[in-house]
Length: 111
Image 1 (cartoon, rainbow, N blue to C red):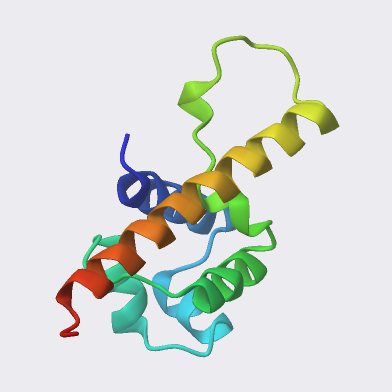
Image 2: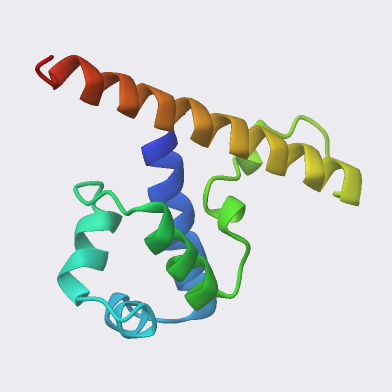
């Protein structure tokens, strides 16, 4: 599953789990309702700072917006160790996405 799709799916899941509308989420993030709608449709791409705002507004850790619960093969309860591993994997994915974005920017920049 690609990272954008996973993020959008999780954002919607957590927002609905909190029982709040896109408008309420936007208000909690000090943002426009249309921006939340764009993000949830996969057309908007939030910054890392905005990801933190979203997580704070949803009362979750930022990495949980990228957590792929379908990737877990067993039904064992999550331990602190497994959560740390998930967090580490998330940070690695974000770093790779960031490096890719930087490389794309560099290739489009005249020298």
